Picture 1 (cartoon, helix red, strand yellow):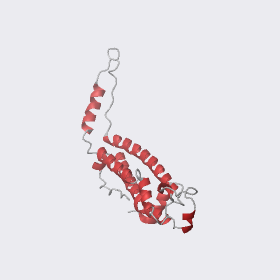
Picture 2 (cartoon, rainbow, N blue to C red):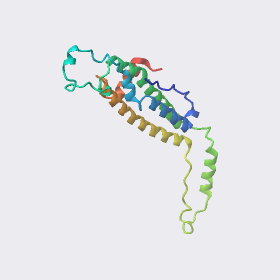
Picture 3 (cartoon, one colour):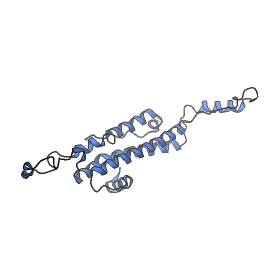
Picture 4 (cartoon, rainbow, N blue to C red):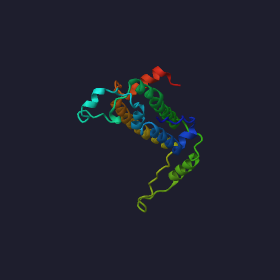
Length: 198
């Protein structure tokens, strides 16, 4: 069973480094959510799912073929252990990172290296004389996006991706684990309350 990567140190530099932020989210999703079938199959202990029945040798196996491993239900305690030790901590780590970076995106950014450049471009655009009869495109001005705005857009997109991935993962867990709550958000909140998040 794969283990999620450790949470990186939460700093504004991590958030503004979109490559590092996306890489962490991608790696975390690939180790747990993208390989959910393999992780669930690893929970099935071979040979313990059905006890041997000597009478089964006298009947045709075609009447009741064994279920493939990807269709076998998983022991409830193994499912619970997987959810509490692997799945929910991975989701919580990604939620913590996205929430932290969302806070960074809505805070003032005094260290923005392009702040002065944007101010000078805005000033030039205001001082420019526009004669639309000579050049109909001269009035166009597209200000450069601040890095906090770019970060906010990235976080919004990543939260949508996260929701889609969690719904898919939870549906697969629900197929294999019996008595799984219908909504992953309620199950995750119950885990947060019961297990205690850092």
